[in-house]
Image 1 (cartoon, rainbow, N blue to C red):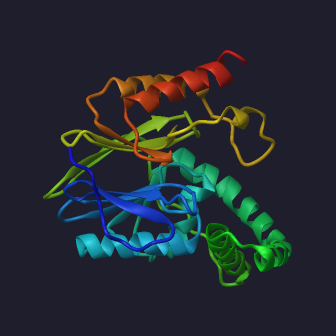
Image 2: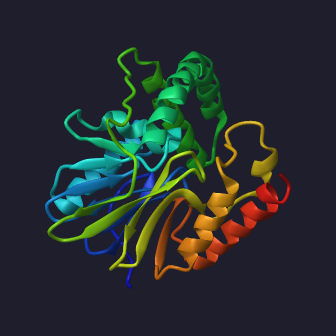
Length: 279
């Protein structure tokens, strides 16, 4: 299968067409963050995850419209972590946001608390970032700092509103369009308590969310913040092994570049070594 990198200008991600109508937004090296995707099913346009800040999600929507000439029919949140869900607020209220029951509940429990913390930190973070920018010479770092300033200013805005999923599912389901057919598979407790993936069986493509990382890092085990412990490491490992044995050519991780079964097996061994054996 020929993966095609598309001409699309964004500082946040590189855009790929993996197969006809199936697109992946892969975080750019200059501003590394999370990945997302969008699927032209013919009569539906499905967005898979959003991105951390509003500007990157606006670029995602711009790309989806440019390459499909459609408005989003649905948005899917693969899990509740803020770097995949904060961009929900960019979508109009008439666009349904679908998630598992657990994702909705975890988002409801954690998002308001985390956002309150962000808002309280915003003035100090703005001051620190603006001071750092004054002395920075590296063009990529300048880009990152300017992006951070935009994001902190946005968080400070009293009109800033979060948006949670509003279509809650408790099982796997399919969306069959006139052009493509995607299976949304409920994984359950693995990386989080209610993970979902998007699987194109005919095209041999699977969007894995944060079940898969291109390069898992042993430092995550001892990190004190910013790196959540997997909800169920054993099920996560077993799911990675199961999906590595499926007839799939391209796996889209939640973070990093496009993957093959090699990375799934490496991830499975990583969780086995650092989370399961040591528990």
